[in-house]
Length: 218
Image 1 (cartoon, rainbow, N blue to C red):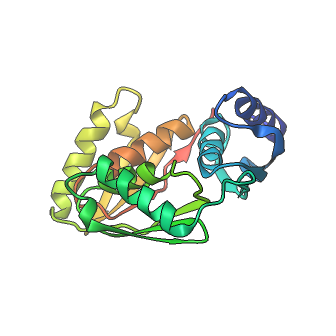
Image 2 (cartoon, rainbow, N blue to C red; image 1 turned 60 degrees about the horizontal axis):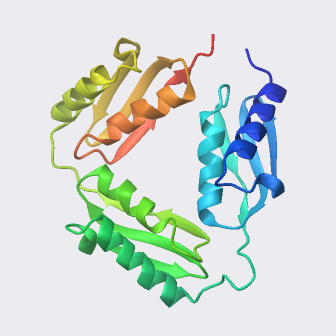
Image 3 (cartoon, one colour; image 1 turned 120 degrees about the horizontal axis):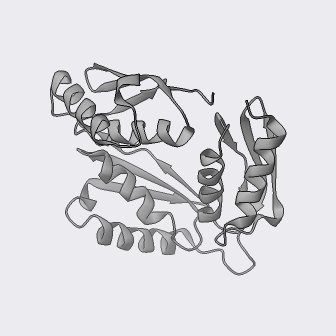
């Protein structure tokens, strides 16, 4: 069983190790496996990356990301300029479905809206706009429209879990109610838990994934 101090030390080390993040003004605290990130960074990408790094550290059960984005002097941009750049990046990333997605930018915070069929469209849309210069945050409100029957969704997810060498599919159960998926069972790391969730999201028609998988560090 890892102690909170061990987890905090490893998160701080990972943040310092990553060349894409200036961790000088990031503070880390851990209580009962829940990591809290505070302080500020100079871009939204750094805030997102810091959260991703903390999640992959062994022993972390949850992450509260309270980091503030403070853009360097002269880097603030008008919302219309941010919106134009975001639209261009979205079209480049999703040329055949970008018209299904709308966005609103207010005070540097970008909100994505619309309906798509696949989770990859939803996640890639967010990834496309994440690095727009001047952005302070992203809210992804894109929803998914289900087209498959629940039994088909369940079968596809179970097959996907079995294909992943890193996952012990026998320790994970899949329940499907409409387009809502619930995952239960145990895995050996947070990374495995997230990989199981990603596999569930890849099934067409899934609109919700409740990841109740427990992480057993023993």
